[in-house]
Amino acid sequence: MIDAAIATGDRGKVDAVIEAAKATNPGDEGEIDALRSGFLAAQNEPAKLRAERQRAARQGAGLLKLWSGKGELSGFRATGNSDSEGLTGALTLTRKGADWTHKLAVRADFQRSHGQAARDQLVASYEPRYQIRDDLFAYGLAQYERDRFQGFAARYSLSGGLGYHVFDGPRLDMSIKAGPAFRYTAYTDGERDRRLAGLVGLDFDWKMTDALKLTQTANAVTETGGAAVAIIDSRNTTLNLVTGLEAKVTDRLSTRVSYAVDYDSNPATGRATTDTMTRFGLVYGF
Image (cartoon, rainbow, N blue to C red; front, side, top):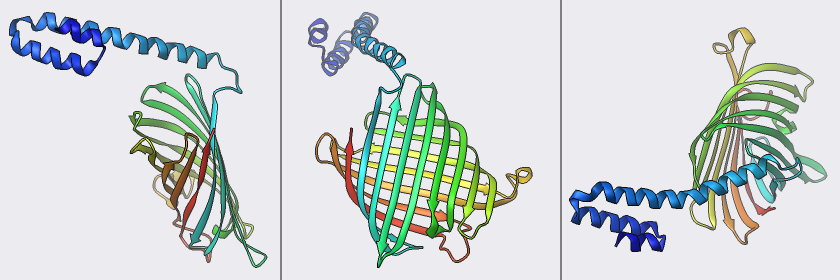
């Protein structure tokens, strides 16, 4: 009976028959467990071989290979330092190798009203990751921002540290990361600021159904008053929080609605501490 179930290759059937066999043959548990172990080993071996072949292929791939990406075009409504409607364009490129993952991202928001710019925001980042083990990775981050409506003409951030995969599955994926950072800000009034900081990040993807996915990203950066009192003299905290819901239309095309919050605890004079934005758009994967 067990051999017949194993011949089907159906793990559910095998487990059911094994459970029944143990109940009716209490003295043969060892032999029954050996049959089940042999079945599992036979099932897992092909998957292991496939994983090894894929890893070898990734290790030998050229620099221009293994890239994937997605582009987004959205409409938005912004509140806070600006109250307007406009367009958002975004592009993300990812290269996932055997041990290294590289991610390039660019997002631009722009709107004009009565011949005047009502919003002009640009964010570009590069993040390499090295997989130390299945659940632990090291990361680096270089980021450039421009947002005159938040009071700065340019902001450069550098960070590096460690991250951990809390969940890593086909339906649920969540990772956190943290590390020291350095940030240089050029304000629109001509002032310059250089500060040490600490960065905390969260990435969360939940594939609720084959066609619907919830995403959550968060980056929090806490600046300090100086290197000597990096922990004690905290001066400024910024938080970028983006929640999105994607509905698949085709294998490559999805619709997306997202809500973003940009918080700055110590903004430039006359600026609001919080900006929010709701976007509705299309995402194309390639």
